[in-house]
Length: 219
Length: 351
Image (tube, rainbow over all chains, first blue to last red; front, side, top):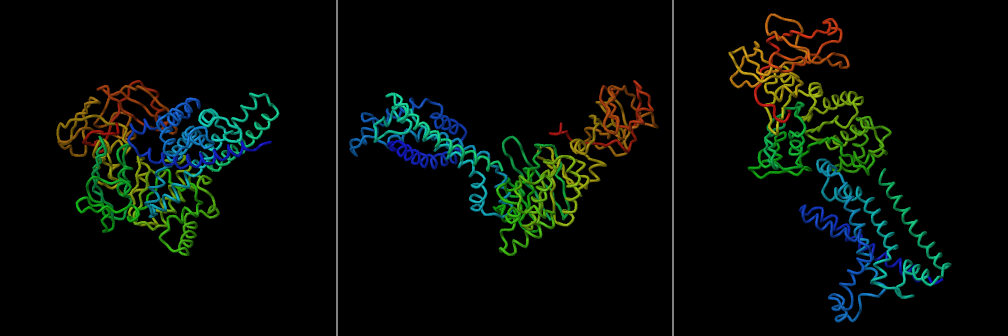
C-alpha cells in the first residue's frame, strides 16, 4: 500500500490548521471590537465557507488562482509556477473551508468569557499582563484548543474544494479523500475500504480529543 | 472615610450620586436599573465617571477637575461581585493567593493560611470554585478580597446568587466579617430587610439620583420620599394635597387624614404601612372600605380594601384576628395620625 495520500493529507491538514489557528483567533479577537455593522458584515463573509458547498468555494478559488485568472496569471508570470494542481494548492482550499470553524469557536470562547473576572482581577491589584495571560487566556484556552482540533479533523476530511483546486494526481496531489473516490471509481473496493478505515480511525481519534477537551472545559 | 460625588451620563440614563461614609456600613438602596452597580463600578475604578470626585481616607481616587483617575489596582477597594467572579481555573488557595500578589512568596503563603482559617475554608484549599457550594464561594470571594487588605469594601447584592435557606447563615457570617473589618462598607441592595439588619445608614437611589443619606431607622420611620417609602416596604400610598399643617386630602383614597407630622408645601403623597392599618373605627382617621379580596399568606392574612375614592388599601393581620372579624363585606379601618407618612417627590423607577 502506497502511503503517500495519508502523508499528503496530514501535511495539508497540519499546515492549514496552523494558519487557521492564528488567523481565526486574531479575527475573532479583533472583529469583536469593531462597530456592530462592520462586525455583522464581516461575520457573514467569514462564516460563509462553512455553509457553502465546497465545490462553490473551489470554483471561486479557481476564479482567483487559476493560471488565466488575475492572481494566478500574475504569480505564473513572476514566479513561473502555477497556483493550482500542486499538492500545496490544497492548503488554499482547506484553509478557506476550515477557517470559519476556528473563527467561530474562538469567538465563542472570547464571548463567553466573563468580563467581571477581569474587573475582579483589577480590583485585586493584579497587573493587566497577569490578567491577560493568567486569567483571560486560561479561561478561553479549552474552547480555543477544541476549535483547533476540530479544525484539524475537518481539514483531514476536506474533499470538494481540494479536488477542484489541487485535482487528483497519484503520488503528487492525491489525498486520502480523493484517493477513496478514485479507488471507488475504478472499482478497487478492497483498497478503498482500507483507506476508509484509515480515515475513520484518524477522525475518531481527533474527535475523541475534542471531547476530552470539552469535558475538561466543563470542570 | 469615603466621599463620593459623581455624575455620569451613559446614553439616556443619568447617574448623579453623592454620599459619604465615616467608617460605617452604608446601604445603596434602589430598584434594579437605578444605577447602584454603576456607582460601585465608578468607586472601584472599573468605569469612569464624567465628572466629580471620589476620596477614600484622604486619598483622592478620582477628581475630574484635577485629572486624577487612579487605576483599580491602585485604589485598594475590595469589590464583592454579585456572582463572586472567582477565577474558575484556579483552586481556592490560588484564588486567595491572587488577592495577595503584592506580598512576597512566604508572606503570601502565610496570608493564604490565615484567610483559610478566618473564612472557614479548611480542607477546601485544593477545590475549584465550581466544586464549592454557594456559601463557600462567597466566603472564598470575601477571603480573596481580604487577602489584599482593602480600605473599603463594596458589596454588590451579596445574597442575590444564593438560595433563601443559605442566606440567613451567610448574613450572620457577613455581620461578623463586617464587624471585624471596621472600615467603610458600601452595600448595594434592593431588599430593605437586609439593609435594616446589616447597615447603619442608607442612601436611596431613584433613577440614578441619590437622596440624602439617612440612618436606617429614620428611613423606616419617615422615608420622606415616595420612592424611599416604597423601598422601605410601604405597601399603601395615595397621592395627596395639603389642606393645612396637619391635614391632607388623599386623592386616590378619597379621604381626608390628620397627620402627626407637619405637612409641608412639597407634599405629593402619603404612605401607610400595611400593619399600621387598624380594623374597626377609631377616634379619628376612619376610612370606610369594602373588602375586595382576601389572600392567605404564610403566617398572616392580607385583605385588599377598596376605599371611598376607589383606591386600594392593603391590610395585613394575624389569621386569628381576621377570623374574629367574621368575613365582613364592609370594614371601616383607621390609622393613627403618627402612622401617616408625609411624602414628597415622584415614585421614579420604582413604579
